[in-house]
Amino acid sequence: MATLKDAVVRKPVLATLRLIVPAGAARPGQPISPALSSYRLNLMAFCKDFNARTQKYKADTPMHVTVTAYKDNTFDFVVKSPPVSWFLKKAAGNETASGLAGHRNVSSLTIRHVYEIAKLKQADPFCKHMSLEALCKCIIGTANSMGIAIVKDL
Image 1: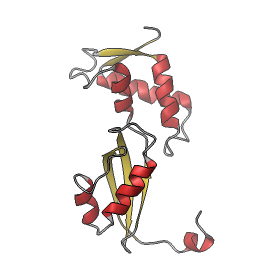
Image 2 (image 1 turned 90 degrees about the vertical axis):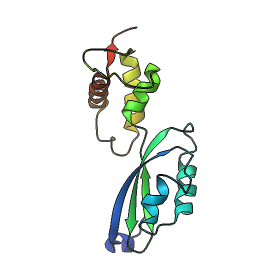
Image 3 (image 1 turned 45 degrees about the vertical axis):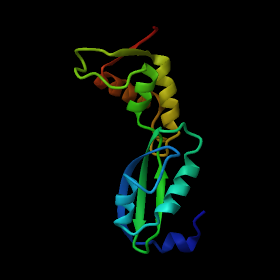
């Protein structure tokens, strides 16, 4: 919890980095090392903290991470939930999306799948303000652009 002194005195931000790192598999190599070492951040501290925060997810789940680097060589990071496209591919059982979305459907999902994905995404700190209906509409739009048809029942 931030104290009043921390809230008044802000650290100057050096950079904001966005990475996609597999859950529980952060190692001081690609793509983490080039991004963090260019700002002289502690790679091992990031890897240990990230792996501890993402141990509840299955291995190799792509996690979006936003790292804020400060000028005093410290950092904070926020781990977001996996992208909607990854959830849709897993639910549909496909490795890739359609190359001709709108013309060729590669799979179909039910409204229940969309609802479950929306409930998972609502836990994301950046989606908490969105209603479940709005999240479902966004997920349906993403599914349509990937060539995945949304049906009432299978």
